[in-house]
Image (cartoon, rainbow, N blue to C red; front, side, top):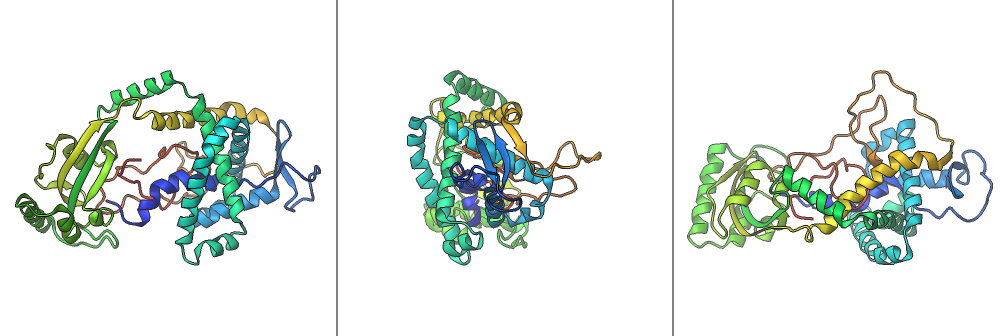
Length: 392
């Protein structure tokens, strides 16, 4: 269901999307003049209450974005892209400044955890953490400042969400999908049609079904699920965990897998379940429906994103006083439904944003790429992230 790379997908949404948007380098102290044009000290934008953005901050923002998502480097000189990045940077600076001391204190734990995860992620890349940051002309403190800015902003908005809003959102989601808050712990062994790494055909549907029935019989005869998953499963994301996905939202899975997760009697071995990836032999170990209280944190995060969008649309334009960045030229034939690009922006006019990588072969992951998950922070759809079927 998930290969190793895509196991980072959720964290990538949660931790790195903001890095695509902002780089919190202290800019409130020091010189009061605007600096020379083109220098790091040059002030490229100002906003109410004495806020400013320097060229150095903005260049670091683009540098970090390029480090994480090289696919978007082609947009860096596009005015539409730059404007969106700048606006979201100002947004987070303003919102983080509004966070109370109590909110900041509570959020500091998240900052520490997320920075640690980010360092681990970058450290696993070729050349390691030190080289990655050096090449990007960044320091660890830059990353820490950034995460603090983003977490403070979203934590502040989450505190503005009321219990009534949470309850209404829960009921709205349940009305749209009665299983929206169903979670299950499921084991499965996938007999895939294609290699998850190369997408080359492994076997025909007939061969896959025959093999799945053999696995089903072994399990019914008392075979060990862990051992059989390691031996037979073509899902690299779960085979070494006994095929298990624990406390996962069933709504995240493709239709056939979701239906079985909802309907299969607990602790029974299923007949082979067909999906586009092949055949799954499944066992549902537990299943429950989350209450409003169970889902409260997730719902508050979702609603914080709504408030953030409202802030960008309604309040932010009135806060920005000066903006020296080039303005985009309107394109008469611009699409009315542009593709998403980093920072919540649309792809710049005349450009084609990189497509999000679909779920890896063998994953009963969602049928659509993520557009709003995880919602703790604002951000872009990572171009190379696969949506995780596991619960958040």
